Amino acid sequence: MPPAHWSPYIEWAKLHSPGAFNLATSGVKHVSLAELGATIDDVELSGTSLYGYGPLLERVAAKVGVSPAHVVLAAGTSMANHLAMAALLDPGDEVLVERPTYEPIIGTAAYLGARVVRFDRRPGDGFRIDVDAVRRALTPRTKLIVIANLHNPSSALTDRATLQALGRAAEHVGARVLVDEVYLDAVFDQTPPSCVHLGPVFVATSSLTKVYGLSGLRCGWIACEPRLAHDVWRLNDLFGNIPAHPAERLSVIAMDRLPRLLARAQALLAANRTLLDRFLASRRDLDGTPPRFGTTACPALRLGEVDRLCAILRERYDTTVVPGRFFELPGHIRIGLGGETTPLAEGLRRLGAALDDLAREG
Ligand SMILES: Cc1ncc(COP(=O)(O)O)c(C=O)c1O
Image 1 (cartoon, rainbow, N blue to C red):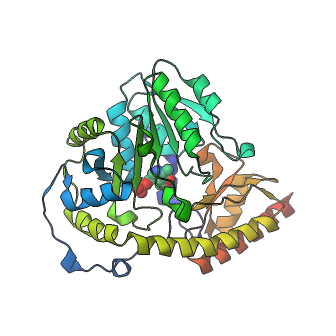
Image 2: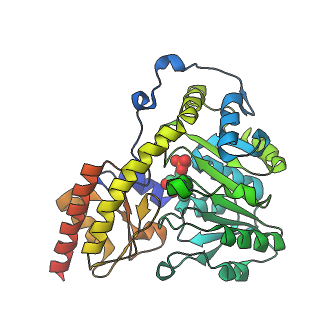
């Protein structure tokens, strides 16, 4: 019997996604302590973390472009999403979540007792948000609309006008819009400001996990209007209370080195995107426009079953991609392009070989 509340996707990602050629990732390759330029002397065990460790709070606020009163620090975007939803949703409330979505979003909303209602982002439409479809799904009981920008799994970017339209639709029924921006900085030179600048109806979450390769720091945050931020800090006293101070110290160092870490990610993704674009252009059995931004792509299979492809890929080629069923896209696969370039090239070659094998099986 599975537990009452769980994420099949996260369990799969932890137990089954690793392979010699892992194309199932969504972040940029991890930064080591040495690459960060930090040493054990930078770490201290205890500090003054009450409602945020001051030096870190200031840096996160400066990065987002708001005052510290708008920021709540959290253990990764995961906990930021959980806290934001826990603060905004009561049992029986409706939450409108994009489909496909990052699965823990719906798991968390259900765990909180909310009624999860969906609206579709269609592959044939570039995974664009159809604001009319969102409007149609809103009811007086809707308390929250949740999207990711960039979108996971497609990496589609939602533009300012669409966000503003979502904000107006939410305001109309007294709801808010939670935007998970964990991939947003992977737009690089054209990265738009956080949605929190579009008005108090917006709540943004993010972290240093994906684009900066710093998952281990668990440096995440919520940016929102100060009254809500105050309430989320108090709610957090019931969850984690005080974070691990060594991670806060290292996060301050990382925050001071973000431009260098961003340049690292940009160079890596530019090289890898060229490989992925070439690969997708060479495969008539995969359907999907290569994403312009971000760290993942999710083409559809034109022939055969995704589960069979994934089995061949693992058994014969020691390579993994994410089966689309974890994103409610059973005919798709998600390919991550944030890993090192040489293994990525080999992983794509193996994916091509597995697709050829699948075609031979008919
Ligand atoms: C949309 C989205 N939000 C949040 C997370 C988790 O982020 P973090 O590691 O910062 O908790 C992921 C990880 O895949 C994600 O895809």
